[in-house]
Length: 136
Image (tube, rainbow, N blue to C red):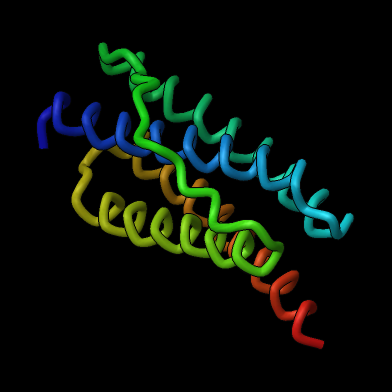
């Protein structure tokens, strides 16, 4: 895989992390239940850190991080819908990172993507636990 293909994948990742950050920040403001709100806020900070790591990989390879994103889907107007959307975002990221880890042959990039994927798995678990607590 050439450098331009890797940069393109990393830029897609960067934008996904940017979108997740914005969704989580807004949702954390709108959630009425304190625990899910604080967890969502904390995870938004993790997503920003992922952006920094991805931007570092992009610029080291001669690219420039892009900030262009699509219209955001926040998940809905209630806590359950927001948590479902956040779980969906984490699941999509996990699938994409897993695929990229399999096809990218750059050791540094693969190492960072594995770390991000592991954090996304933890995020998904945190969101699922909050969703499950709503049903109790």
